[in-house]
Image (tube, rainbow over all chains, first blue to last red; front, side, top):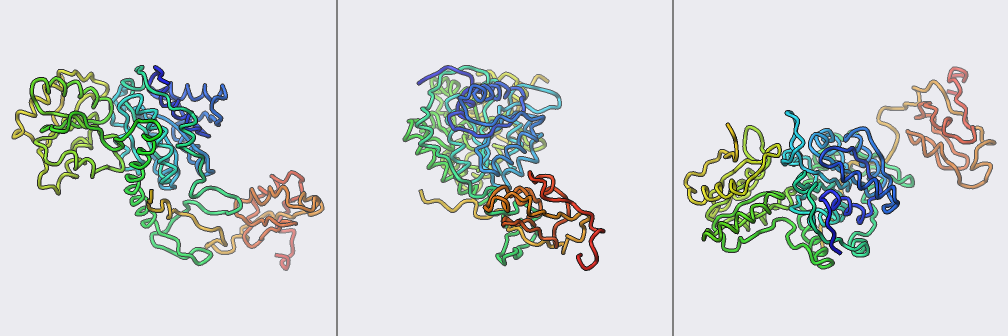
Amino acid sequence: MHIIESGNVAAATGVKLSRAQVIAAYPITPQTPLTEKLSEFVESQELDAQYIPVESEHSAMAVCIAASTAGARAFTATSANGLLYMNEQLHWAVGARLPVVMCVANRGIGAPWTVWNDQQDSMSQRDVGWIQLYANDHQQIIDSVIKAFRLAQSVSIPVMVCYDGYLLSHTYMPFELPGQEQVDAFLPSFTPEHFLNPDEPGNFNTVTLPDTRAGVDGTVEPGYIEIRHNLHEDLRGALEVYGDIDAEYEKGCGRGGTPFIEQYRCDDAECVAVAIGSLSYQLRDVIDILREEGLRVGVMSVQMYRPFPDGAIVEALAGRKSVIVFEKALSYGNQGPLYADIKAALYSRGDRPPIQNYILGLGGREIKTSQLLDALKESCSAIEAFDDTPRWIGLKL
Amino acid sequence: MAHRDFCKMISRSKPGPGDGGKTGSWRVLRPILHTEKCIPVKAGKKACFNCWLYCPDCVVTKTIPPTIDLEYCKGCGICAEECPADAIDMVAEDTFSTEEK
């Protein structure tokens, strides 16, 4: 069944279909309609869950941590400064290996205060250890939420599903609603690898020494660095797991096949534009125009940013004539984070292409198709002028 | 799908006597269980065990009757507070003789 709804409602419906058991969230623009919809679902008993109102995002994540530690399927959502307020608890949730799922409706960060879209909020959390998925449209939002729950419980790592504030969260678009039976078959109830069980008492995440040591029963308990190494290895292993989960989802509902990156008209493209989120779909229009003018260009979106799918990205980009990375985020004092990561992934390749970074759309500045057109034309025709300094689009200085 | 075994290493340890020594010596109030009021004792079967469930130091056993390990009990009084049968009294330590301690 197709419905026409907002991106936030697509996310909320995905959470309902996934049968989340505990939801704790604090409203923040532009995520608010998502939490409102979820509280409606709980109130009307369409969703059998505990909805726990909290006084802050830090508490929202704390509740999710507690619920998840007890074995429940926990969900929260936030944006911008709310996400940053959660930061300490984000580290805790992943260190404790809890399969929490969270939606982030991407928004710029204050100061100065802004409520409009860019991706600085979730990009600034890339090193926390959470898995990060990015959706390009409403269909991908609802599908990614369902797949996120499955991925989180498969690898015991929390998952962030990010989508552009307003551009996706508040716009209305048709999308197909997966059936409840379909989702139930894809996402069965689960027993976490570790959870609070009175019959098997345990100490979780107490002070962990720099070195290994013997526990009370003589077994060797890992030190901090072993536990963190294991998290990293599990994150790398999550790439393969997500590929399989996506394939299984595609078998059930016919949508998927692009878990890590999505390419548009890239087959014979000499120049590939790269972006995350709705911007990559806006770029498709630009690609179509340039193709009509005879330029061999394509666009690639990055759907999973952490763990970084470097294999798929290198395979897609190595050997091209040029690569242009458009970003709505910046590692201040350096470069766009995606640009830097892609550049590093291509470093060992002899056929690495010249690569240029563009920064745009911060704090919701409108991105005009004509600006993208100009930027792509400019960079396709002057590869020798590429430098390592980000170029800014639409600055009025 | 043959994947690696995930989440095989977290910080989880079995509860046991503390590294800090016999912390029961910190206690000012001692829990005294009156077994004649205790629910599992009266029922003659495993029941209630709120004292065991709520003890933050895991020094109460899930047995009939429950026992309290005074080597490590710090006398917080949560068991007495949570006991629905008021079967646990908190008694000042200085009322016990040196031998009893």
